[in-house]
Length: 163
Image (cartoon, rainbow, N blue to C red; front, side):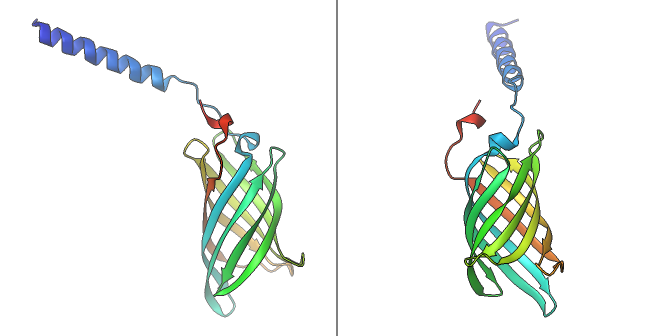
């Protein structure tokens, strides 16, 4: 066996060993407490109103507390009508990085506008989250069909997520 071949085998074995060691690093499980922090987000999609499909969009920020409480604010548009809203609710994050959030949306006079339930997944080592609205209910109890997705990104680095 030539020296070059032996050298190539040794380098390949070394690199495989490094890859295995990197994969063996323990991954931290996701949790409600680890998701805590300040987040910015956008939501876009369509509401199905009695008058027909209506575009929906919002942009805002929210705080996730280690205790599972979410508070925030956004600017939203329903069919081009823009409003500033206040958010209050709860969330939970599972060890597999999926989760759920229920948020009550209020106008600036604290009148309840809607209650939204969302399914979530935390990605990019906890620096981002994706979501989809699973339920949108008006104060009257009427449920509105919707197709709304959300993208959120942590505003500040959370050292609890780093390895």
